[in-house]
Image 1 (cartoon, rainbow, N blue to C red):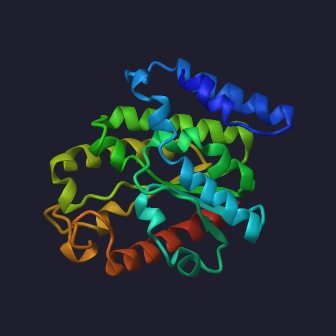
Image 2 (image 1 turned 30 degrees about the vertical axis):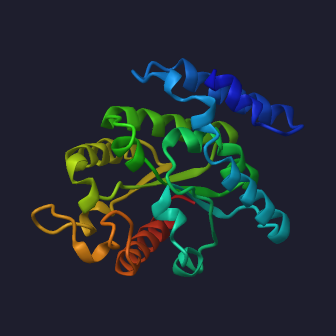
Length: 247
């Protein structure tokens, strides 16, 4: 079962930490999401084990400091090669996985997030859940709720930032779902001082809600250099405002 698999991945001698993660995964498994948890097989959840091991090797050689802001999620973050420079002087660490869906991030929270004892987490996720697994906006909201709940059980005062899901030419068929998901998550984040929603969606489309081609590479899905320039400007600006107001 998913619950057993997630607990099995926790490797620590800190009993309080284990109990917190135990509660977090147990509650997620019990939640009535309308999702078939049988879908999240061992193979599905462990799809990115090699990338997780690569992060661990990288940490062993570089030994990143605690208290950083972790950027996690899927390929839009993973492929952001200039992230650390773009966010400077804010200290950040990129721990995203290309192709990830929310269950992958939930399953690997220990390695991607908790191990670093971060001051805040910035997450971009949900696009692949909507596009590849055909989840609906409510499903993604539920998964984000479980993500932020789990993080707060481990670090009660942690600040969590959700970057809105980007519309793209390649995701045209789910553009309505993307828009609805962003609206749900924006409203959800506004209900807590520890949550913050960054609207990147508005900067990726024209007045007719058509994605701007220059923002994307030739695959019409991933961000171009121009796209990352826009992300850097908007996200750094909003992140600085959020940190100033709530830290």
